[in-house]
Image (tube, rainbow, N blue to C red; front, side, top):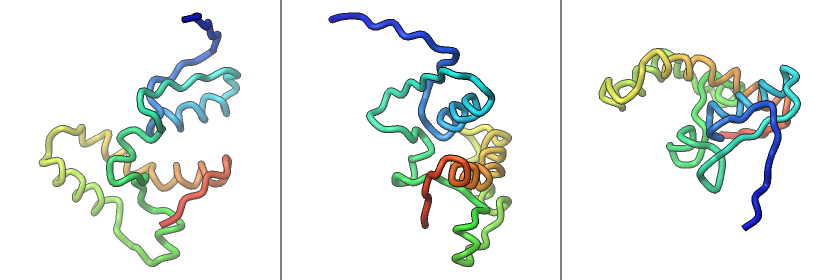
Length: 116
């Protein structure tokens, strides 16, 4: 088997809900060569655990359909689901609080399409 050598400015481990936006942010910041390594056959990581879709709150899609659960309500449900352990509450909260703006950023800047 022949070896291939790659040269890059940044390697991101994991193509999930954190890794993919990190790669795009790096490119927006002027980093020219970014490699995302993902062990699974598809990207999405733990962000896809809920049946193959990305979790988000406070999106324009939800507003258009009249869905009004607040970030506080989502956080409370999520932390209860995890029985108050196995997650760091501050990271979960930050993920929830930024999820809607991340969806809008991906749609507005990269043409990613989301739907309910």
